[in-house]
Amino acid sequence: MNSPRLVAAQQALAHADWQAAARQLRRAAAEAAARGEAQRAAHCEQMAASLHRAAGSLDESLAAAARSAARDSGSPRARFAAEAERAETLFAAGEFAGAARSWSAALKEADALGLPEVPRATVLRRQALCLAHGGEAAAAWAVFDEAASRMAGADIAHASAWVDIEHAQAACEAGEALHAQQVLARERVGRAAADDLHLRAQRLCVSAACALSRGEATSARTEALAAREAALAAVAPLAYFAAAVSLARAADALGERAEAYRSLATAWVTLADLLGPEVGRSWVEPVLAAFQWQWGAESFAAVRAEHDRARRAQLGRAD
Image 1 (spheres, helix red, strand yellow):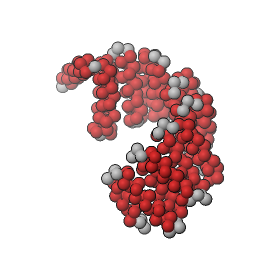
Image 2 (cartoon, helix red, strand yellow):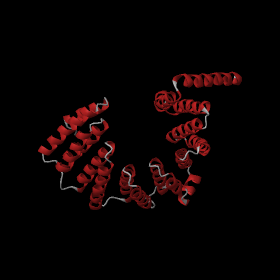
Image 3 (tube, rainbow, N blue to C red):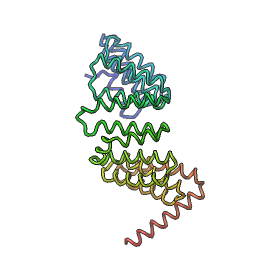
């Protein structure tokens, strides 16, 4: 049966009050510890750490993670969970080297736990992202490859290829576009892309982003158009949005502002149909605002007005 503290935490969560929920969980942890329920106390502290992090209270999250390990210090599971929480919080704070060290500590506890291959690969992927963001590219790529190898036996379609896609995206974001393209060109990624429309869309999105980073706007536009088509066929909203943004950026780089605006306006409508009007607006509006700032309010308004005129004419012809 839930304690009054846990009921209060659930009520706070229902109102999206992460901090209040975390405070209730911390009190529940103290009460459980007083009853000698070390495992329950550690779990409550762990949940509190996650909620503090979601609320942006990173110091409180780190403190709760430390308490989580201390509540059940003899348990590898509690120590693993505490290091994972610490790693995620340090990553959120931009302390990538510390986050990578915490993931290393978590992996040591994973050995004691006998953690299966798939969750171990997830830990490795998170560690690799920390290393990539921290500028340790060679180490990051090696860890990504280890994660992909561990996923090879998983009962998940194209699991290793999906890790390769994440690897390539991290490389592109780290300014290593050539390495990213080499990963995307791997045979298993090509086979998976031929079989899985969603993976194909994601692969093309990363390829478009790499082309943009090299200043190859024409190639980026071609890749982004193909990515958008594959994402639509796969009904993959995130990949579709990424493709639409890359298409807009490529068109803008080519001086085609009307095409850039049209890509985003179309994305707004499509995502609203798929996910609802509020989601469509929340995803696309900030990108349009960035273009408005870049082009200037007057130029942006002119492009939007021309798009609206062309759209009305098109609808009139259809009628």
